[in-house]
Length: 448
Image (cartoon, rainbow, N blue to C red; front, side, top):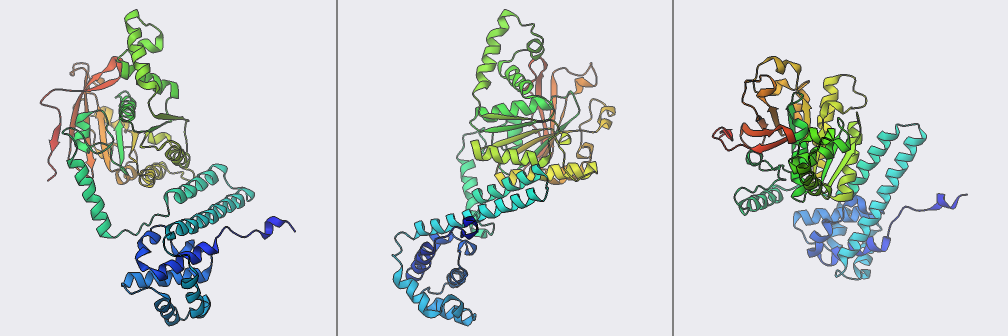
């Protein structure tokens, strides 16, 4: 017989006994233990029953000791399953004390996590032997392992704790300097004024027709966020990584992208190119260059970035180029992608900015037309999943007699604030948006 077959799952009985005994000696240490250990973390069933009884007594506000725990277990008809009152007394007498109970609790939790890792590995192995899809198995394993890393966190949150957290957020925002916002900065003051910066767990969708500059806006936001010290991940399904880098260099150095691509560079432009390269090369930005990725791959890559370099912002170019396995209907596929991006924002506690292509019909509505949410292709799933939706338009694309260098970003959905239109200058030669000092800027609709 293979000796591996005789291996027991990781556990530490002495640590479990010390935790239970310590709680029965001094119930005041309950909070520090409960923050680390859940019922299922205990390896032995009798220990799970005892811990559950202690938990019930604490919730009631009743005293916790060997007698009260034994009485509750007897009332529930399970006292004999834990070895009777004698075992409870033994736990209380033989415990080393409560001074190190947090360390014992951490051991219990660690062994439980190891058992969960083994379970995940076994599930992956079983799926592989059964001929499952490799990418789906990898994504599933990554999701489950990330849940272990960030998990062991209760999703059952008392309103008191939620209120305290909300009040801390309010105090943080109040203490900021004027013009500084609590979210990740976009580098555009008008946009930050509407959104308060890019907030954790929010999905912002920016829609536009081709040639409006939506990728340029995305790279500019990514560079601004990274310049402020926020590790940023860029999912680029439309353009290659070197193309994205060149765009950032052009924007940062304010040098002609056309000249850089064609090599028609004058002597006076080289300092600008050097400045652009210097301004970008050391930014905390990672690029994932893959055409037509699946949403499960995008989510897995985001999790890896979160683990490897503490990802603070994810930007995606663009939604319609991302696939969702098993979805033949385009509307359902886009909805699945949007849901996956929103799930990523929630799970990783980061903002996600995703670009989207608008329907061709927009081109026929004239230069003064500002898109609405119905102009998003197969828009139902996008409208539902997004926390904010904005549309980028440049009227001069449709008519040469329109004011050149003008760009508008219309905020059509904003769960947390006002709607309205930002007006920017568009520097086409370096594909950069700039603040426009004009009474037209920051046109805000009061939402009450």
